[in-house]
Length: 221
Ligand SMILES: Cc1cc2nc3c(=O)[nH]c(=O)nc-3n(C[C@H](O)[C@H](O)[C@H](O)COP(=O)(O)O)c2cc1C
Image (cartoon, rainbow, N blue to C red):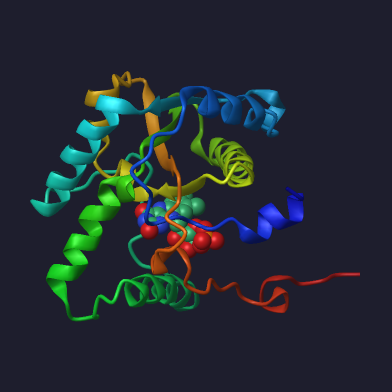
């Protein structure tokens, strides 16, 4: 697949088929994605790969936690209040997702059920969690993690696989830490679900948006 095609056609997948991904496929993807650049080639992240019984238990416990309204305490702080121009983009994608699922704005039960699906990784059979040494500054790690993940996502897309990074996967870090045996000296950064996309699901097909280049770029010469 052409790199340009992978870049423009990759999208976040919110409905996965109940079909596992072979361990060898995941190994190949990670091996290739490890060619992503990193600060001083430090490759600061460690990657936890969860499949099988472990991920099923994680999905169950994460789902139960959100349905019970358990307090969330992510280890990378989440933005509480967005400036208006960013909030608009955030709200817009939320509307597109809920509209594609035919969940009305005031349908609280429908929304909670959707969050439960999100916290249980939209049924994905595999999850990779990026972790970082607690003693290292987060800012540059986050750049390195982002570069790794986009490379991983594009390679996965080129194999017909789907991905979605999910803050929702790490809002209860204690669940991941316990089930996946992540030591206390590792900060849990972000989870990315991996699996075979249900290409017929409307939630995997709504029109995605980006602001124009002119609204984001300022040229100086
Ligand atoms: C760091 C990060 C965290 C994300 N967390 C979530 C999440 O918790 N739930 C969700 O539905 N999408 C999540 N997303 C997916 C974004 O909503 C998505 O990337 C964005 O809307 C752009 O759409 P696209 O990936 O389809 O191009 C996350 C993406 C990133 C990069």
